[in-house]
Amino acid sequence: MYKLLPLKLNIALLLLLFSVAASLQSQTASDRENLYTDLPLVVIDTWGEDIPDDPKITAWLKIIDNGHGEKNNWQQDGTDYEGYAGIELRGQSSQMFPKTSFSIELRKEDGTDTTAALLGMPAEEDWVLYAPYSDKTLLRNAITFYLGNLMGSWQPHYRFCELYLNGEYYGIYALTESIKRGRSRVDISKLKPDEISGDDLTGGYIIKADKMDGLRSDEYFTINSGIYNQNPDKYEFTYVYPKYDEIAPEQKTYISKFLSDAQNALNGDHFSDLSDGFRKYFDARSFVDFQIMQELTNNVDGYKFSTFFYKDKDSRGGKLNAGPLWDFDLCYGNEDYTDFNLQTDTWLYPKFSDYYGGRIHWWARMMEDLSYRSLFMSRWKNLRMGPFSTDSVMLFIDNTIDYLGDAVARNFERWPVIGEYIWPNYFIGQTYEEEVDYLKDWITDRMNWMDANVMLADNVSDNYNKQELLVFPNPVRDMINIYLYTDQSSELRTEIYDLLGRKAVIRTYMPEGAGYQLINFDVDLAPGYYILKVFQGSKQKGSKNILVGRK
Image 1 (cartoon, rainbow, N blue to C red):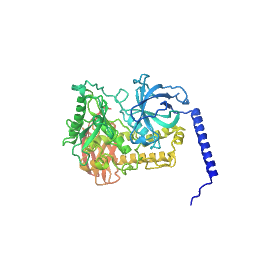
Image 2: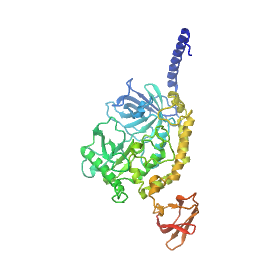
Image 3: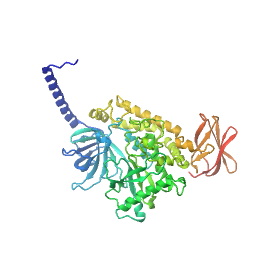
Image 4: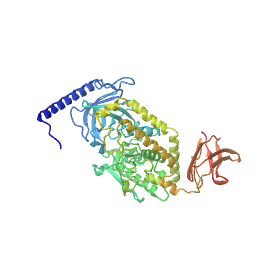
């Protein structure tokens, strides 16, 4: 049974608490004055006005970065920028957190837009201050953008920084490039309101599949998904560029019809046709790269939310590209409201029915095409031999943590979430190090599983002809991949002959067991035509004519 404390003791405790609070407030102010950090500082003053969800309010912004080896203090003059900006809250579910993300628009004194190169990133006016909160490693978006940029197409760049808002320390943020059209962002043609016919009308467009909560009907459009197993009956897309209030009616009609025509080709019986199938509309390479990142991260929102596409004018290619990447804080095993997104040993792309949240089925359909699957497999294998190697990814994580330095401790002093459940955490580490270790282990397990199963997804092994020998790429340059099925576990032998019958290459491979096998090895052959044969014992498993191209 609880006992009430004596009145005098209660008063004494209250006085002590007030004293501690006053001391902490004074100490916080003192720490703020004396804090010198290695990370760049972003300082925002709204003159006491609360930041709304929409529209942007005017604020004063300065960015302090004195360079490598120099310390930064919030009272110093801005180095990269000091001037007006518009600011508003951004995000949807993340707005419930006390540490919130913001959209920033650089402005002149008269309120018009202006551009600036911030923290070494190309000059633009629109930026995002991303607030890692439920991702206690602070790293998930950073890892994704880093890997995405290594794949060759533009993905948002970012710089870690520390934020002061109205004199209050807000912790670690990532100043990030927003997704928009521009030479230094999504580099597609400008689409003017009067470009409503011919090649002018065909690009450029940026659209996004996302949640439509709170949007008016003129801010997005829908297309019927077609009959494909159990997927939703329609897909919804917002206008990113041109914006919904700037896009012409003819342009709305064009992009909606283009997507419908593209999907009809993909859903059709002849979708694999190289001329009139899905490749007529879709850029397969961009869809492969996008798919690799969704699968690697096992993105709970993958293929349905924050899913961007863009299209340039027909005179500049004109196909639909998937990307850029966006919003990966709930990836890499960081959510608890599904089971399959926690797992490292399952594919995401086949899970497009309403039961799984209504993902877009396009990638699942493409994976039924042998050539697309081959591209997916070879792209993954090549990435794993270089920028996506386990050692490379782990090194990036370690280097980023070293770069953040003491700011990590300051961030979690400001936001004491370590060891606490923050929606929708699955794993709750008791230290920052435990959070990072969980992330590293998850990524390692995921990549290893993908290595072993990259051609064994549901739609691959079910549709693959077990008598077929698949060789890719063909033409060959310096590496060859062979995919085949064997019902034995005895040694496989690959032999390559020139057209005079001379044996040029012999390679052996020992399967771990019966089933699908992926064999790859380097070749150094003169350009020309060759014959490749695969044997198991004395039995020939198959042969293919190959062309070795110039290096």
